[in-house]
Image (cartoon, rainbow, N blue to C red):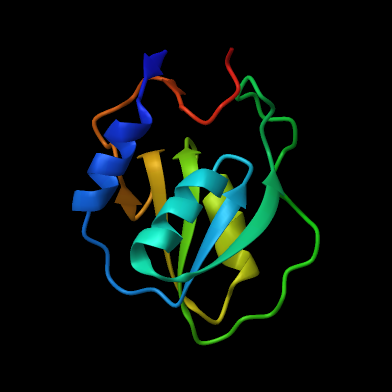
Length: 133
């Protein structure tokens, strides 16, 4: 497991160039902090969507990701969907389906997405906001 300091993440975010988005959508739980940081950096509205697919040990607990809760209808916006990690891309794809009718791109800290903050990392990461005392 690789440790990443909060300062390493924010330094990389500060130099990462992204286009304008009308809305940042964070996938809870893992995408909550990265989406919040991006919304602050870009001065963009933030929304959260709860999608459940894997347990704390990263093992799939469902055949397909499930959206938990209601999604308000949004149309004709440029949306950036954010998660911490994308292994198979299934969670991001499920989120994209929830926002059909919009221009959608994806962002992860590592893994598979349109924008990846740490493309060089393939190991599991100990994120600084995870409870690990």
